[in-house]
Length: 225
Figure 1 (cartoon, rainbow, N blue to C red):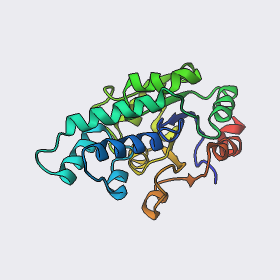
Figure 2: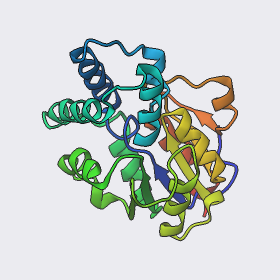
Figure 3: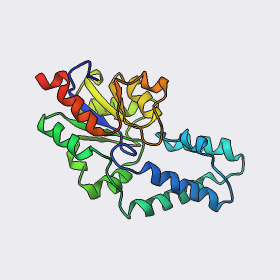
Figure 4: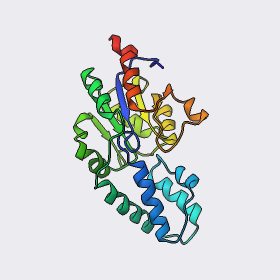
């Protein structure tokens, strides 16, 4: 696996890619659903992964039907998720080492997430990761969320790098679709979602951990600059 173009910037997703939060959010949503005496099938939940809240709301209303208190359910889900996150959330394997390598090579870095800036601070602040990125693009910074390319295009613009020369790192299907639509070289590091043939075809590679991305970076054309 090699990058087809020199890598001039790297754009990271956050949940499930930098921090191990997707499983916490999944468990919180399932508990909030059970509190209402309802059931959320796993296949329905997985369609929400990597999407903005408006999509989650639409999926929930379609599944649970008219009269469902979606606002209350979302609020309870976030309250439960924040309680879990505030106890501490682990970094995904290879995050620190990859950031070290990118800093050593003077490659700029950004985050493009469906979460809010407050959530970014809550999850990355305790790990002192925020200063390691030149741009944080979060909910509210773009017109359309993933799978639209907007979050990644805004990130590239803020870094001042052509999207085609950016490497995007994602763990979700909608994130991969968004990064590919932005014209970025894309790698998927699956978390809750496996790489389907459709999704793998949009990537230059699928990896188990970000350690493999660091190896690709070292072997990419950028290493010769």
